[in-house]
Length: 189
Image (cartoon, rainbow, N blue to C red; front, side, top):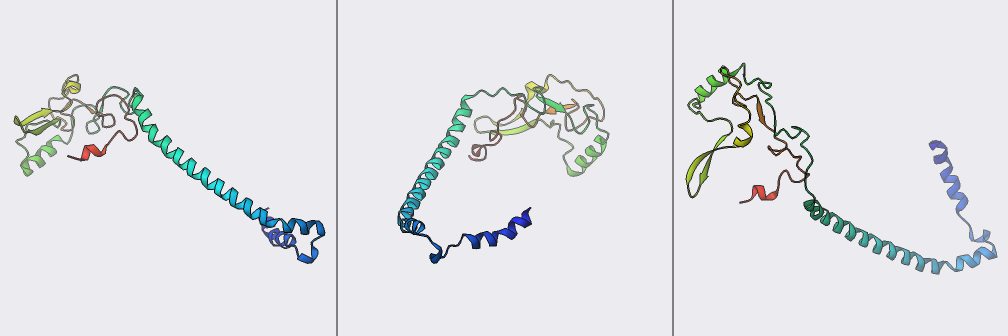
């Protein structure tokens, strides 16, 4: 079908070309009116340009106001990863709290000089200008609900609890909205 239409294009184009000798008197009067058609083309072009500019401005305004409308709506969609539990099973120990390679991890830490640190994975040191350095346990309120399961070969990723805080919702249990995950303010001082 496509080949047939491509083959007919030159024939149709040649058939539409009219020679001045072939024009009838009625067609001659239409040919004399063509300057008015040129003015009409200008009017249509200007109208199309105005509609395009107006539509572009309207689209920008709609997009800008969408963010403001989004801020007014309360986010209550449950996290798709943790299903509002705020934690997920530890991927290292598969929720058992025991890591079969814990002794090797301890050996590597000893060789690198990190063996003396008794900090858990969720403990960070924060430099406070007023109080100086202090240790803070991140997500302590969430993790206190999950006691340590293992007594030997303790998984270092979850501190033997078998669960880690959900990375998707960061322990809120709510699905973050698009563009709320990171903000330019997160990277600026």
